[in-house]
Image (spheres, rainbow, N blue to C red):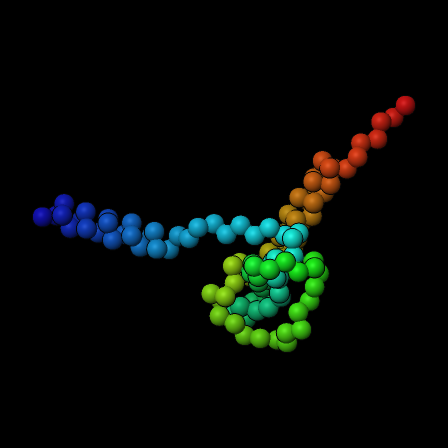
Amino acid sequence: MLAVRCAAWLEANNQQHKNMTKETTHLIYGDGRIKTNKGKVEGRPCLTMRDTGKTLAVGTNSLEGPTTEPQENFDVIISFRNMEGARLLQDMLNELVAEWSREVSPKVESL
């Protein structure tokens, strides 16, 4: 009897975990499809990102004013608890760009 209850509990727990996990969202910058905004979520500064499905010129700003939207409308929300968290993300991006720049920059051969 106990084994049956444990099996049912495990199955329910596994199903709950499956419901909580989502497929990875892969957004690619550079083709003008990603709309990024600054905002606040639960009083904390955040960045929101969503794939618009249509290509716009990179750097294009929409004419929308400030809005309040449900979190479900975004593909990614990055919120920061404190300034150090935002700076850490900035540092990681800067490091990525620096390494990438070194990899793709033309090499100069000395004579």
